[in-house]
Length: 287
Ligand code: PAF
Image 1 (tube, rainbow, N blue to C red):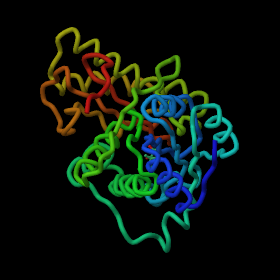
Image 2: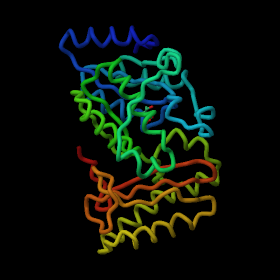
Image 3: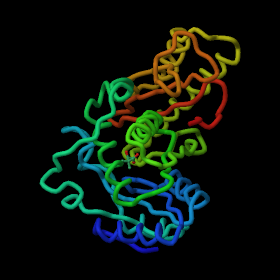
Image 4: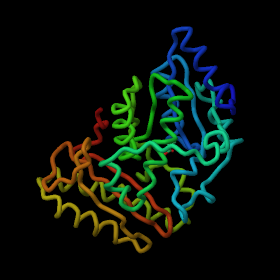
């Protein structure tokens, strides 16, 4: 596995691959790898001839007061973990090269960025789409793989890719969970022992909503109340949102159906966690 820092070297590497008629799958990450990231890398390896993993803690997707400075980093361990997978390049650009003089250009997707996480984090998705657009231009992938835990992010990136006419296949990977159901996330590292216990309430709430749906409950307001009660049964938990939405438009549903996604954002102590799941079953979210 090569480690590439300069943007121009990364693009040259990709152009060589394209010249040979071979394919590239990109896995954009902010590092601090866990099994979820490694699963994305393995899926990328099945999709394309070559895998590029980008590792860049993208400052512009954090608002002032968010956890940019605390965001966990361990380049040495990440390098070791990626090298054990079928990864050709670990692309680690510098902040100064990615955002020369702060970077004056932003890529913004309207509409679906204003709901769910966009309400609490109004500048977040603009930061994400800007960096992902840059990574697409620099690495020139045929495929890009993202985790479905960030279900809104995936919808926003799909929309951007369509709107900007990139011929890139955006591929979602199902959420990878700990044995007690907690969705894997680099931010789980912030949780104390007790908070870690409370944090499984997200998955418990999703499972419980599925059970109610299976028992015939369709009224979104009623499902939301049940989910809220399950979440708030845990002392350290406060709720950012509980939403039942259409998987594509992210529009709120009054009546749930099999294509409805339950999306959750909660704080456990000071750590913000998100999770989601279809009400009907664990079917992969379709394009
Ligand atoms: O999901 C993430 O880790 C980030 O939002 C991404 C897509 C790598 C952009 O910085």
